[in-house]
Length: 100
Image 1 (cartoon, helix red, strand yellow):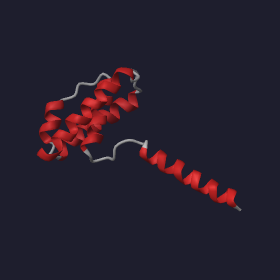
Image 2 (cartoon, rainbow, N blue to C red):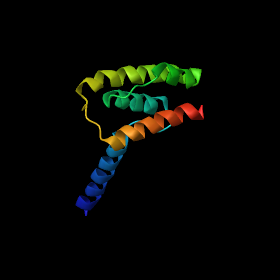
Image 3 (cartoon, rainbow, N blue to C red):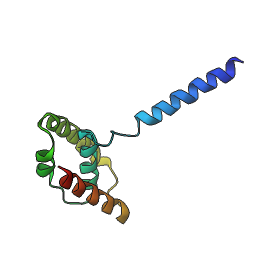
């Protein structure tokens, strides 16, 4: 009987680990920084200053810190993007501009 309980604990822990590793939550400055970083990886032009200007003042520092972190990681990122990913990033970054 102990083995099934242990299995459930392991499965639950693995499930939570998957949630944590999924990335930043949408709507956060960290999520926006991740999008900006990936857009750079895809070779898109990004108005980083405009994005920072649209963020509330209290979130700008978080964006800058996250963006710097992603920039270091992007040296090892794949440089290839499918057209659908490129279009999605462009649309999301434009929507961010229109909403604020």
